[in-house]
Image (cartoon, rainbow, N blue to C red; front, side):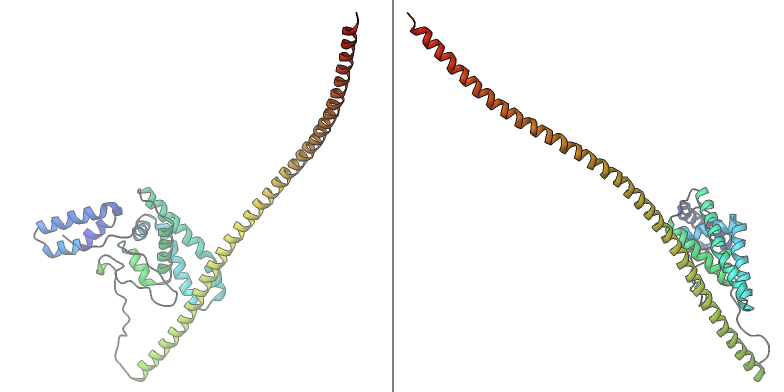
Length: 298
């Protein structure tokens, strides 16, 4: 049994199936007398949802992942050449390329029955952005054994500690100088390297500032669109309420007129009632007088 081969197999599984499969393979190795391999297998970390989705993108979304790496390489060349126009043009492409890769990662994951949350999608984008700017991060993604998401500040190398399941799955970056030490030539090379490093840090800092500015601009555009929608809704609601208020005022005026007419009718009715009462009393008196005269006759 080979640790790398088994790990490559395990990290193709959906996260919900990972733990049981890892336990089964570790038990199998232990039964075969390979105690050290069984221990290593048991210690393989379960990938986060975002890391697993990136692994699936690498395996199933070659076009989108390749687009991320190609744009990253082009940005690196433009930075090296200090081609600011090219950097600006490539920088404008970055949100589209990253967005397409994130959507493909979500599509692949959901096609395998795993729902990608908004937070996980943000981790996927950060990981792809790190691969776009750092060759070491790109190599980690290509291993297909990522266990956690990556991030970059645009200035320092991406932290890859514990990022890949099997340490030997990605090659170490050799930063040592080869050849004999000839004093002045080595010092000159070191000075030149420091100068390039300083220049590179400045370019990376400028790139990070550009990325942040683009994010802020995108956020501002979204907020502007939301504000415009809210304004339109407010105007529509205001117009609707104005119509309802006018209708209510018209109805109130009509009711006030009806109330005034009713109150006047009540006044007339009271007046007629009093007049009728007086007339009735007078007529009763007249009738009593007539009865008394009638009774007095012989």
